[in-house]
Amino acid sequence: MDVNTFSAYAYFFFTVFLVVVLYSYIYHLYSSEKKGRRNYEKYGDMALNDDITDNPVESVSENEETKKEEA
Image (cartoon, rainbow, N blue to C red; front, side, top):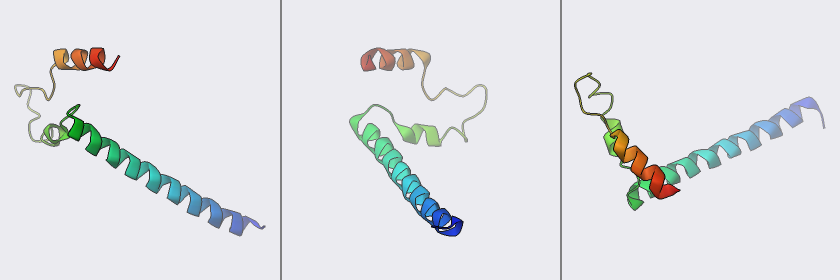
């Protein structure tokens, strides 16, 4: 097996690996939103509501409560 063949196999398997990681991440986002752990639609408005006087997406107390529930 020469270097070009090895490079082609490595490229193919790396691409397959990245596709699997991408789809598992998408599944994670979808399932956590359906279970009610996070609402990722609120994070989509973060670029629009980035003034210093705007409300945060999540308050600190919400983050502490979710950490306690997960533990």
